[in-house]
Image (cartoon, rainbow, N blue to C red; front, top):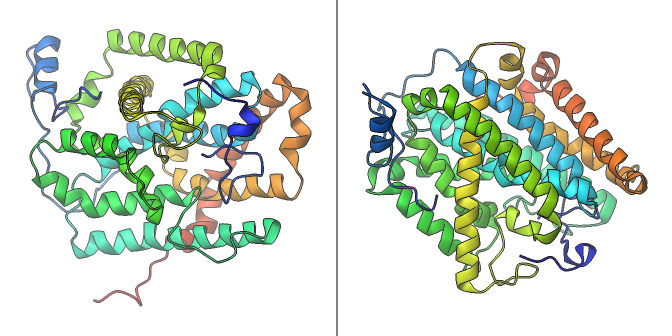
Length: 391
């Protein structure tokens, strides 16, 4: 995974700023703990042999889970930081942080999405909510970003609402994952099948319709999340596991800082064929790297989860509004780059610019997760659409 010259290998997407880079396997068929475990060893044994029983109720959730909202808050900070650093990855100080974040931040979000959508069966209430909170926001964000990019860069020449290039891919992925949830509830060995699909997806040319290459690449994390159990979440909170998780995350961060310059970061985008430049890997090497990334993404995601506070706090409230932060922060970043060429001006300042971007990203993310922003944009991104649905 040696890198050729960084400036030669980066391939900007349609929405990415001009110089941006946009780009386990051994998981068995389940990740559930025994309902009444007799000890940690027995829980681990059950973890590798059983699927978590999926509930069949379709009743709306009465109360948000503070633990998951806390997790969403902290990982959303990583999302905004990662996007703010993408144009600075030519510098080792930024490249290490960027690589570390991209190893697990989207696997984490997909994993959590699988857990929260595990009871999707496609009833009317669920379909209405999916249209209001995923389909409509996807179209609004995708089309508006394409128009903004066309204004500044003259491309894309034609609007391509079904070919997401940046933020829209995740909403497209959630739509596809949600619709296929009943399949993963039905088939045998769903986790194994999803891993095989992810591995094979990098061997063939797949059109970017609804970001399908990335959707298939991240599929194992969604299916694993579906078959996660509450007991497993509780097990991650044991102090021995939390200590090991802290050491693992810190160690992986150091490794990324030391060796990220030797790695091709485009692997972390999960959307290219293995033999496509700049990856240029043979079939076996490509399969090995993708399998490695699945394992690392899962392990670091679980390590991150183990350190997330369980109690309700201000991060819980902010974490319940990450949806707005995700949709809106891209507009700010594009404006700063296209209109003010900010990252080109920051690059000469080296590590200072990296620290400045991280600090600014944290401030921006928190501002976009405030109640005022959510109240302002809720009618836009979560319309009621009562006129559209049957009574």
